[in-house]
Amino acid sequence: CSYIRVAQHSCFLRANHPAEFMAAVLANGGGFYHPFAYVAEAMRMGLTVRPPDVNASRYRTSGRGREVRIGFQFIKGLSQEAVEELETGGAYTSFDDFRRRTTLRHDDLRLLIQVGACDSIAGGMTRPMLLWQVDAEANAARGTRHAEPGTELWKPVDPPPPPLLREYDESRRRRTEYELLGFTTDSHPMDLFRDELARLRVTRSTDLARQVGKTVLCAGMLTTAKPVHTAKDEPMEFATFDDGAGLIEAVLFPDVYRARGHVLFDQGPFLLRGKVEEEFGAVTLTVTGIDRLERALVRSDTEAGTATERTQRRRERRGPERAP
Image (tube, rainbow, N blue to C red; front, top):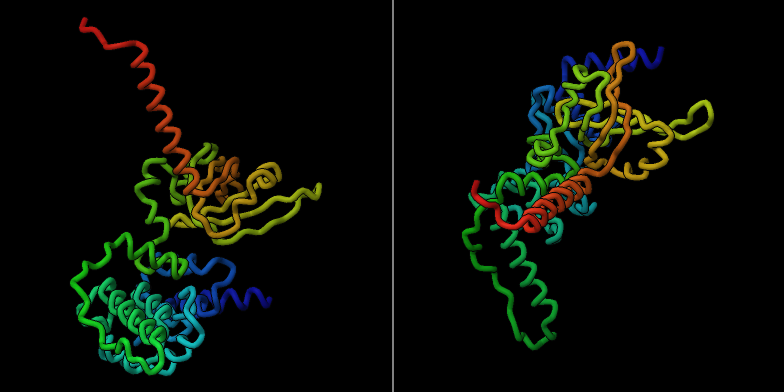
């Protein structure tokens, strides 16, 4: 009964207050799944997910209306001192105002700039320009520390205006966001590998129901895994992957789990091969092979290059082709 009550309350909140509900789950650090899975689900629900912002964010993720604002809690490497100072500040009018009213370390400033938390106060400056300014300040501070007391060999001055530097392209911004947050706020992390996956011809989660009985290739991020034991006390695992379109429920039976289960030490992404099966309306993938996507791509490129070299050598042995 207690589980039913929690489920009913959760369903009501998700249906009537979706942004607040998803934000609360993320503020709690996630739940059954990895945090990126809840961000992906929020986007599938039609919610807008915003990156951290020095004016709009607090430590914990928040939600209102149709918008989820990511909190500082997810920025990897951000110091506790920076979080506490950001919690008490706000309403910064410009990047210079932000620098004057805070005492954040340069490392913390770089992290905030890289995830886009200073975009709203950049005043037309790009992220590379903001980083250049922070680095110039850091160099000036190092020069002050290294100067001999009383000699005044070098007196720090305000750094010159940053040069005009082009903004990072969309791909680089997303990859940086993924590295620092563990997810991207305007797309699914699997979109970073869209071109590579098109080359491998993977089957999407939404198409698995039409592939029952067939062996397919899938790719996705690990959202959760549950090791269990068979009746003969052999280890196996149930795992759930997210490919951006939906979830892939997978089973790693003892032989595969013993051979390849060790690769599932983080969220991936992973490349899966297996047989699509259906039981009582539930579609699952019985995994026969699994590897990290980056390793699979390198191996695919190597094999393609080797095949090309073999073809070239055969042509060289045959000599120049003669006209008929």
